[in-house]
Figure 1 (cartoon, rainbow, N blue to C red):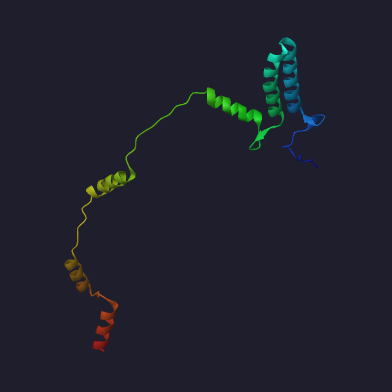
Figure 2: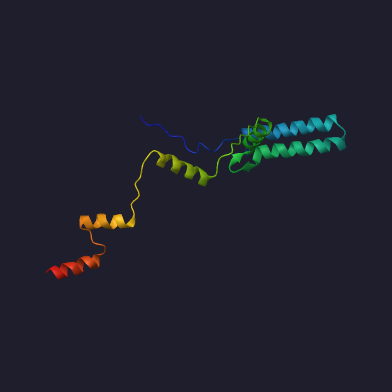
Length: 144
């Protein structure tokens, strides 16, 4: 059985002339509101209302911001503007003080012995570890 796989699913179909159905609805709605405003109000008042309605309908039909339709951007703006905002601020100590505090907490439970330089040389001598490579080579030459 062969099935045909749909292609170009992101592109909306042109239904009414060169416009998609959504574009046609936005343009027809803007034209209808503009016509009602023109007939119901005097000309000098209606012009100030028709221009924003026409611009909004054109933006809804054609304008995209970051490849997002203008209706989604407008919805996001309205949700942000009208929604509740909760700002929480917690003062945190500086990073240096926090790191020093953690180091004090870690070390406080452990006893770390301190070894002086003299004791370190004594331990190295008892283990047979030489202080430098050259001293070890000179010793081997004298022994042979």
